[in-house]
Length: 233
Image 1: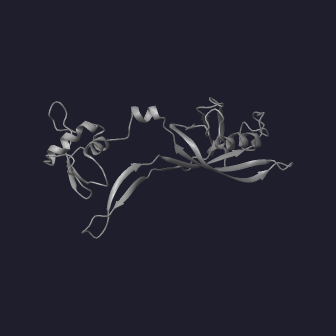
Image 2: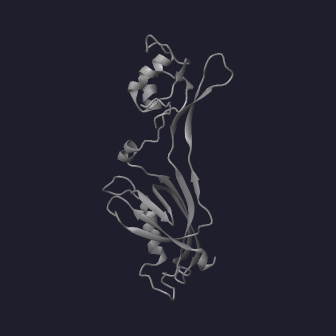
Image 3: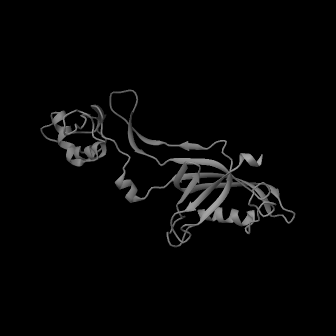
């Protein structure tokens, strides 16, 4: 692999006893993969041939890639003629793999920020595999490819200040599951339990407790104060 194809990427420790530590790697930018998934619950309803699929919650983003450590092609490597580095590959590799170890001050592995170009991704390292393909004469690794999987990390404060929720932008229908109540449905759909009144009025419910599993409800959009009918987000 030509040296011109390799760009520097960094992993910065965000919390814990190693907070602020920056680890530098060589990153092969030919590809990286983002993944996001959702969780659905199959709800059996009498009289229909297949269960209804009810959205439960979203999952965290996943970022996966291959990182590259190489003493020979790294312009800052210990064997480079351009610039010496005090830490050999083995030491840098140990610093990376130790990010999966529980930090005593956090009681969990530390969160990190992966940075490369315009990409910034705060995460915990979920999985790290390593493949050694070259060795120094003394047997120490000289070239390693790391398969890394990052899982998005958001603090509780970040999730409260910027929840990933959207109120309905148009009238939609959903089925009642289990012991759900209108206030819970309103909190889930509109991020406001007091909006249960809106649902009750739209469905002509004299008693909001008169809903049962399998009932269908209409969920109207929330209008702006100026009456434009646009959904509040």
